[in-house]
Length: 107
Ligand code: FES
Image 1 (cartoon, rainbow, N blue to C red):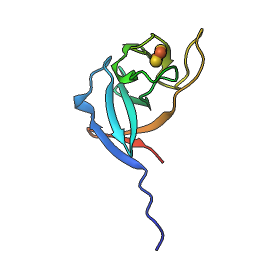
Image 2 (image 1 turned 90 degrees about the vertical axis):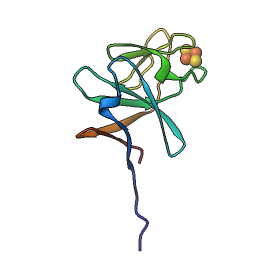
Image 3 (image 1 turned 60 degrees about the vertical axis):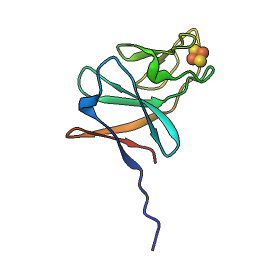
Image 4 (image 1 turned 45 degrees about the vertical axis):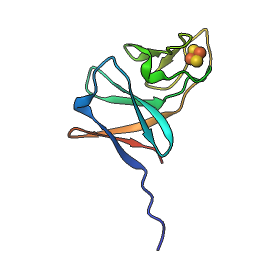
């Protein structure tokens, strides 16, 4: 029997998230920041700023960007790219929303 791979994990309820406020979840030991978008979709990125590890889920959200709460780096929650003049990126995760459940693909 092969090992069953479980890579899609239910992490939160959509109705518990607010647009403009990040939500921290932990999956398989990885901290992930969820951001609900205006259209009801959800973006998921690594909850650790590439600068010095600031918790991005606690940052100020502006459209598709979040500002790190520690030193204000601006990061795109769609592709994880740090915006100029700073450089770097965070890991992004595929998200699926089914009814009210949010699943993150950590595979
Ligand atoms: S830790 Fe995020 S900007 Fe410094």
